[in-house]
Length: 203
Image (cartoon, rainbow, N blue to C red; front, side):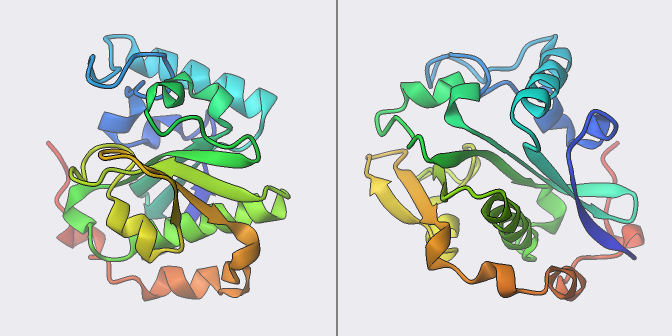
């Protein structure tokens, strides 16, 4: 079954995983601990955020598909489009970096390399767009907190730029990598992901 990574657009916005499609965790200035950032109108506001960011800045998300189902999703942009970044103790993100605000893999296919390949695709594209680095806040204790566990990022070339007891700011400098030499298509095909018949579809 064909695997592919494509940019998020208004045409495929509805393919975002349900919990991501209405999540406004980063897009609105709510302090950490004061709520999830979701709302009854979350999907509408999220689509508006994508519309604005795509128009003003350009590609800001990717979807990993197997067949016609999206199994992973990532979102990124300059921190100025993500006001909540300023409320973390290790803030602010660097002005020369793009901020990775979400890297989500559906639970039933986690641990199979999808997140790593999706991250590499983002890095390759941002490098070609002449950006210098990518940064993110990662959790030291709770892997489910966006955008994920510190162990994952440290294993994939990031380093701690500004430490914190809960959410350190991590950075990856593109000049230190050779990821653009990787064959992304071969990496996609090598992933050990179940076929569509083996993946349970949420009811």
